[in-house]
Length: 159
Image 1: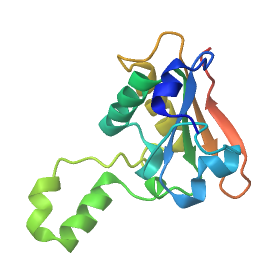
Image 2: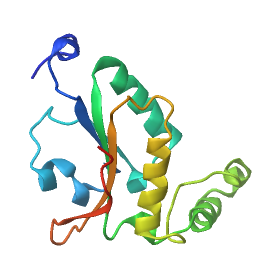
Image 3: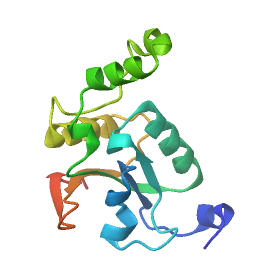
């Protein structure tokens, strides 16, 4: 596997593809996309949502290697589809009432109220509006069915 210094000077064509997806172990992009180790930077979090932390990771990655495409992939049966932010807030407040004031305005980017496709459209819009999106970089959004392994396009890549 090449070192970062080597990757800065490699001809990566139009740049690497970065995947943003859920941390759920059932939805591992290396498995369902057949990726080799080191082939594709992957940013994973609960729900695969585009959060400020995702932009922090994208900024760091794009500082050390050219970026050609951002691929957002959510998955069927995601926990984010089963709860609202209020549900999470309530559960945490019940578990540790002494900390409930610290989470009264927090968001967990759940998407029970908006659904899978809308969450992808919203997140792709955030990625397209990213102020450091490299010129010419494409952005796309998909759903992976964890039972069948089939990808369904929700937002076409904007090549």
